[in-house]
Image (cartoon, rainbow, N blue to C red; front, side, top):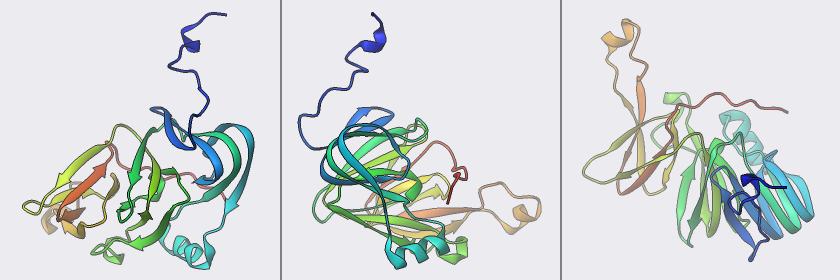
Amino acid sequence: MKSDLFSSEHMAQPATAPGMTLQNSKSIKYAVNGEMHARQGSMIAFRGNLQFERKGQGLGGMLKRAVTGEGLALMAVRGQGEAWFAHEAANCFIVELDQGDSITINGRNVLCFDPTLSYEIKTVKGAGMVGGGLFNSVFTGYGKLGLMCEGTPIVIPVTGAQPVYVDTDAVVGWSQQLTTSLNRSQSVGSMVRGGSGEAVQLMLQGEGFVIVRPSEARPEKTSN
């Protein structure tokens, strides 16, 4: 049988080392040797001796998720083998954190990560309940973090001389050392006349970067 489908571009090769790699722009491959963590329901294929178990967040995590709407419905993948992860054909990227690094990411953009990383749901400073509540997951530790994004993300450098303003529905994440606050760019008169659709943004200041996607978030379908 002959087809371009069977070219090396599409063919899955055996892993040469444990851990996370890009299979292609839409999926991540993880060679499991022990344990890793992934978004529930994101596994699209696997081979080897692997078990998939729902990962609890503990009482504190469950309460935060119930109150904030932010959280990661995770599963632990344990054993020896290879697994592939994807979500609705979103573009996939890998971020590698060194010891001491920290990054804040919207939970909807997390696909999988190494067990050496830890995360905590935190309120975005300066943008609490005033903005209806903004909450993200802060990752710390060392290891690889697999992200997904609808469309090709834009990484915008942030410098002390000039803050960056981002739509709260489009932001993927940012370097943790940045300071955040809400910015209201719409006048009262404009709001009375129906508004511009761009009333409030997240303002980031300091030295670092912010990641945004080229579309505003759509409500996710969730199941209990």
